[in-house]
Length: 214
Length: 214
DNA sequence: GACGCAATGTACCACTCGGTACATTTCTTC
DNA sequence: GAAGAAATGTACCGAGTGGTACATTGCGTC
Image 1 (tube, each protein chain N blue to C red):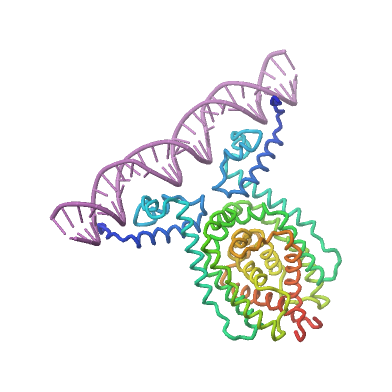
Image 2: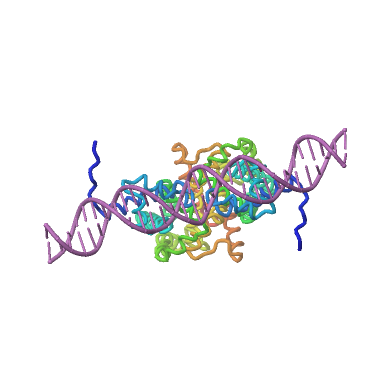
């Protein structure tokens, strides 16, 4: 059981540090995470964090940037095909719900970053352009619905995005205090179908309210 | 400009520490807050934190408990009178929206506590009973709506509470990342009316969808 | 196969930070 | 007004923490 003398591989080392750091920061927040702790969870040493990233802060920035890029890529695969608009928004809401539940570490990073008032993300200009037109799919569905009269005409995509994101984010992010106070584990597998269809109902109910024939 | 030798007052000292600590923890989180920093913002010294509370952890617990009690008291004043059920839920949603916007420090404490997976709040058994039937008002309105056929019958109060809270919480808690990425300051006073009526529309649209005559 | 640099490891430092020992001062009580 | 307790202040400690100086080792290149 002797240590293999470990082949050198810059990319691998860097990537491993980034992965472990992502877990660690998502677990404990920025101040709560120890640089030594990150290092000890890798096969390399603390020295490498400074070699590759420069310091704790830059490491955290790298984590944040990569997390946002990753989530954006994952989101691009959410397609609603050519369902009719009403079923399209329902589907989109439900897919978003599943998406959030499958990326809880990312949700935690977002919550952490907001505790820091966005001080870090604000330095990542490159992310701005990323999310700018993340609303394309949503806009397409809404537009079709406006055209055929099946959806309200007075809501913009960002509003719908807020409503859906808020619901999904809350379920993941506030699970602990909420679960304690109301004794309902919002991530209980038995409740997922209920919660998933609920956000669908909410969005469809909202966007079709005041529409004739509904 | 000489210092008055400061009369001794246990209650006052304790209360001042608690207030300052609340601000500090809400600002910087648990790990991010320095005991020395809290002390320096008061007229007393760090020693008193240990005298009155025992340590940083117990101080944080006291902050958390008081914040939850305070918010609960404030919530008890949210009344919807005897509006008809549909307008009642709309009103309740809008009041909740304003309530969240007026208690951003509390929102931050909740977010922080969830970052810590509820490890602290879980030790505050007394809070459990507090929130248990915080759903009374909501339940009353829903019940009246079910009775007169103006609201859906298949949603329970906790679900409605989740939907409303999620929306309001998100607007406050994720303001920074969201504002950066989409260039919309969700707390911009000019947008408040829009966002307030939006949660009303969402909830009413949802709870009345499938109801005849709408 | 020697050279030179990129990559890695070790040992350590300076300082921060929660916490405490001990002295002191004010207030109450009789 | 003396005694005793409650309240407060000062000075300090030691473990933890981000960061670094310096040595070393593996790897491509000629």
